[in-house]
Each structure stands twice: as structure tokens, then as C-alpha cells.
Image 1 (cartoon, rainbow, N blue to C red):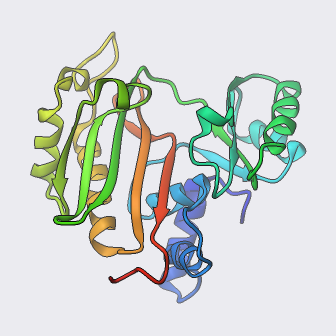
Image 2: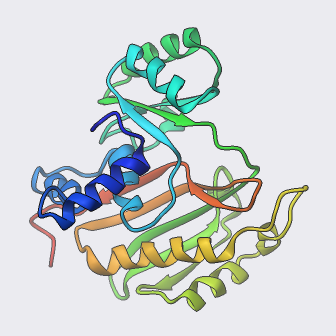
Length: 252
């Protein structure tokens, strides 16, 4: 099951949950019990997909040969990433290789990425097209509890600091208001021959992040960045980080 594309695996696990088997929550609870500080990117997206967050098509593999096979299934060009609990800021670590178009490129980059400290496996991911990048996340405030953040993503997250917050849980109206409140709200409209953002789909993502924060105390933070907008206006989580609270502090 580890070589299934992430969306198919999430659907499979959800179906098994109804039969009393493995559940998406096992991914979270096992990590917390093991004292881990975060889910790896594949696990994070699997968890988010279980709440209806659309994620990029990707396959988790162990080595360069499997990465080449996965790329053939997904279709070139692809993105290759190092994945691991400790690999949380990939750009700084050089843990991402973009727009790989051949088996030779994948083989070379796979071997380089596997040598990065903390790398536990590789993510072979579709190359998502689109120029607009947003961010959606969760943080926990000492006074207000779980809070959802939404704003400009990618490299603009820290540079432009254009984000708004709401206390979870959220309604669809809350999510729509957040979209209207960022300074660069026009980016959600038709843009350079690309369709307007599907606000209903985007609202469902924002609400889902709030739902996770309200239901799962062991999730400390979520960072979906970038939340990329395809040319047809549909949002997709291209990268995601889920950090965890230590098992001894959950419920405190």
C-alpha cells in the first residue's frame, strides 16, 4: 500500500476505517505515542486528505529505482523531495528537486536527496502548474486556543506578511471573509488568463484545518505552504507540515 498515490491510499484507509481496520487517525496517534515531533510530508498529506483537503498526486518510495517507476506512473515532469520527520524546511536543506524530466535526472537527484541527514524516503510528486501560491495553517494560542491562518504563500509568506486569523472552529462564511480580508485579495480573481479561484473549494480547506484543530489536541501546528492554485482555479496542497504536541502534554 505504500506505493499507492496519496489520494487512493487516503480513500483506502477511510474505507478500512468503516470496517474497523486501520484508520487515518492511526497515523497521528502512532506518531504521538512514539514521541515524534512531526509527521513526515507524506503522512501529513495523508492525514489532511482524510479531512477532504485536496493534495498533489504523489507516491512515497524508498530508493532511486522505485522513484523512476513512480515517475512513470505519475508522468513527467515530476518533483522529487526528501521526506522525514526532521526534514521540515526543505528549501533551506536543498531537499527539493523540481521539474525532473528524465530517468537520469531522477536517479541523480534521488541519490543526492537520500544522503541528506534525516531523510527516511522520497516523495515523487506531480509538477503542479499555476502561478498563485497561498498558505493555510493552524496555530495554538495560549488564550484563544486553535486558530486558523490564511494568506499569501510561497516565498511571500514572510516577506509580505499578508495573512489573517480566525479562532476555530470556522464556518464557510468565516472562510469567505478571510479570503476577502487579505490585502492581496485580487489574486483570487481571474489572473493572467487563469481562472478565478474556486472559493468554495478553498473555503472547505480553511474550514477543514479549523476542524482538525478543534478535534485533535495532539496537533500543535499545521502549515500548508504552498497551497497552489491550478490554472483552472482549483486549490491543491503541494507541501504540508503537521507538528505534534508531546504525548505527555496532550490535554493539558
